[in-house]
Length: 297
Image (tube, rainbow, N blue to C red; front, side, top):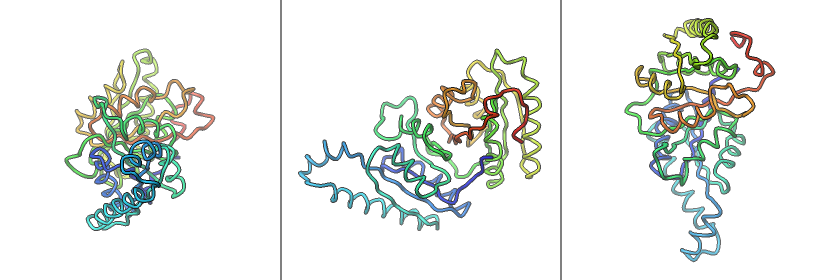
């Protein structure tokens, strides 16, 4: 069972507008759940050696590292003062994705929140392809933020569900988060055109999820949609229901070809104007089978 853990929240920061968009979400979540925030800046060694050091005629990276540490510490103090939470700054060096994973594991982070460029962006300096690569490597949920949200917190959470076992693993996490914010949970059953004969399975699964949500006193509605493009259908439905968060699964194993994610994940993250929270699946033997209905409840 995948559970919500906000004891430590990691935000990768490169001081760009894109990366800074994640701060409000992370800080508000930390305050709301009494968690701790970790700000991480990753220095890319190749940039230091090839560009910055020659330009500044520096012999080592210590000056730059100290500058970045001071800058990140100042930012951390500002966030701590504004939100009344603990904020720890960390500066490391290496591959962005690898360092984020390394730091999150070392500090036992429960969730990563990061800014990302949209599919219409030509800027890939920090969190474009890196955000997507992180989804395939992180062992903890990753929330991607593309735009500035008009409000903090989540009141309408969209939970897409298809016929894969992985898809249902995010249910308990979604219910726990909805309970924290007192949010309405919108369940969207996604059915491919060639899977209409299996509609009865979703008609069994969705009421089970509603029952779980209602047991936690969460308002919950469910609807099934048949679609040729699940990502487009999800985004259209999110707009229709005024959702402020989409919770889905990361696709970490290409062998599971029927999972809701794959190209779905890339399209969803690139095109969504609201935050997308991607949860890495737990691999169980039953994930290889598609015959059981509701076995994860």
